[in-house]
Image (cartoon, rainbow, N blue to C red):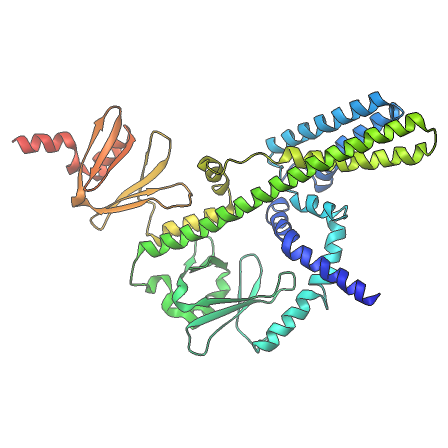
Length: 442
């Protein structure tokens, strides 16, 4: 009996780590942190509203054939209406966590959270045991230096004996204990953002955002990586780091889309089976005047499952993986991508002294002159960075042609809207095509 119970705990942990964990993180990052005119109880209540209406319809019609048809129609209609309302108020797709744990038989987040505390994050849970093993293996104690992230996570931090790596270990019990190993050569820099009162630790893996109290520790361990102390400048390094992180995001989006499509196919297949079962039950009740209450109860359960399946079917929209606009819209709304993009601009030395120019498609580019170089940077978060930096002497000319502004470089021609000529006439006054033509004929 104990063995079966232990296996059940292990199954819960494996399911949480492999499937539920990412939805839970999404829930706490987005759903609870964003202010909404709706309470959590009202949000969940709206999800059950179509089911309640369908059951009332069945009861009023005494579970006859007409009431089944009307109930099914209302179930679909009200789920679509609620989906539209959620989309209008940006509430859609924020409770994937609840949807996923319901598939496992949990009717509320509180019930599932109790199990998480019991088996995983609480005293003597999986994380507690794992944490103790790691702390013993790496000889970590409370005297080990600590840095604190903006989200409140407290990390132990130390260096390898030959100082070529730093190690970070989360001391909190509600996240999986893992050693983060970062090569010193992979640390790009750390800098203080005094305006927003935090520190950015930029590495080739990811960016960490720390509280200002961590500054003394970083100065002690990796002083040479302080932003102000960095002497070499290689924009390709920062661009490559950003592009790698963005392609990871793209893979994750594709993986989630694929999983959603599979869930939709499963929900559609199950719904068809349930409808056939419902028709079969109606036929039984017409031919056999027994077990009516039990059969009615089974039909209510069928409608309960149908409600969840219909919500899954209508919530998954077909995504064209070849359509970049779908990706661009999504990643430009993701907080992590926006933070990484802003940090990239700082790493590239892009200050607020730039001007903006636009293409006919509406893409915004930043342009400026610095240290004898002409710079153009695409100001849209994308999987590839568009950044051009050439000597001013390599700018041949700019001119208006066919209702657009062309700027001719040594090896390429850039196209912008005609309004861009006002910007270029300001920052490149000696590269005007008409002026150059007149100057050359003199």
